Length: 161
Image (cartoon, rainbow, N blue to C red; front, side):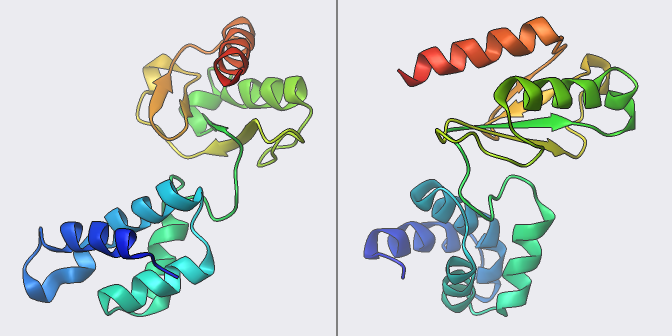
């Protein structure tokens, strides 16, 4: 399941910790698998568990706790919209609904062309900038009015061409 290149990347991460604490590299290993495969499958979790010498359920607990690990394939652009209470008070839920309507998908869905996945997420720690969202688990964008959401979608579509 794991290529030699993947195992080499895992080894570099494990080497950062004392020999008896290889499990500390679990998040890095999950990130590596996701970078290579686009998501973390149950089979990948088992392979990571075997590599790190930990129970598969312990890896699964990490995968399911953090929303940055995709448990199924996602679109080229993953848009996570914060809908926690502070963001909801500043139109976070409305921003999620606007995006879903614009793209013709439900919360957690992916467009038929595989371009966009939209999902609500937990607090992104920028309540004063609400509504906020995270693009591809890397770039936070703030003050996302309907107009700004539309512009973002257009920019991302243009980037994909």
